[in-house]
Image (cartoon, rainbow, N blue to C red; front, side, top):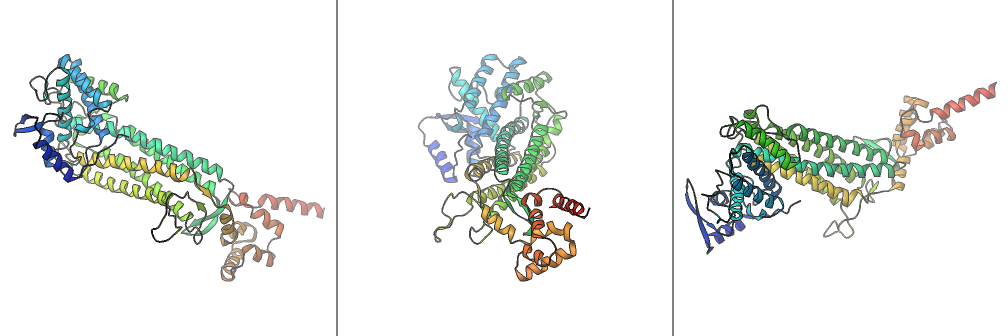
Length: 503
């Protein structure tokens, strides 16, 4: 994960102040007028305007997203050279500059806020300017000498923000989805290990937060692993079906103005080469440019997976509650003191932080939903907020899952004695007796057990419903936690003995 610098509003103001006071300045202009830019930086006039206009999150654009945009730019430069439209000396310089950024250089040259007006134009131009100024240096020119290599004429050739930005979102989301899936797979594997480790530890199952019937801790862990793998399939499906379809070549509104048909095919091939993924051009470029519902699909897949993880984390918190005056079935690793006033208190902080990260995922999904809904006509201008929340969601969830695995699950222990104690004192085990003594008798025994506080076993023997030997076999942990009627095989065996004696 690349380090992301966080800038406060005051920090950005200082940057702008320092820029104005810099001795070495160059003058750049756009159609709004001329501005001074510090000669040391690689970005240009449009980036400076964005820095002045957008003070929203106090953050910079995700650096992995910047590299995704650079991949798209590299593919475009290669495709434009393939068609003969771009001179090799210019195209190769842009490609070399792109490769430097992809290797980790110049990532401090992208200071714009991720939430911005303009449908991502500020990000697109920031990348264009940095690529261009570095390419100028590589070809022996000075920064800002755009008559030789231009941010618009060359770095943006046959492109628009409106096809570059959404395509780069997909490239970045594919990368982040792989890391999220890897984290989920780690979680599922560790849950499988705990399922094996705790396969013989019987505890009380619960429904409605009330005692139900016995289950093994291993069975619970296996159920969590199964749900996590369903999340993996969900995210894989959304990623594969939606994120490999690009609208490069659609340019401004999907009509392909200024992009030759040959370029549209070549940029697809080149982007596939640059990313190592097989990209496809959308069947309808206008649709792919003005609709962003596929991002909602990915956000939803991430959110639903987060819901599964919230449920799991809360189960862990409840099973570890106490530890003396709660359920106390699980022993979570002690990670930090839990109170500034209560000595010795340790809280389930790792399960709590997984919950909170998942809440953030849910909030991001809502922001993406509103962003997708609010596109008009031939472009959804809300893609900056969509991408910001998608990247935040996937990053938070990936980090939280890895934290849960490393700081809780790997060293998770179970309190076998406490689990056994709760099973033995539960009325829930009476369900296993129902096939043998009937529902009515079981109901009467349950009521008596609740009213007197006496163990079910003692009451069964007192009423002579079953013998001690029969009870021992019916209430075996394995009998109560596997499909079938507990003790049925034993009863058949006993009945066969009885017939033999009569004969």
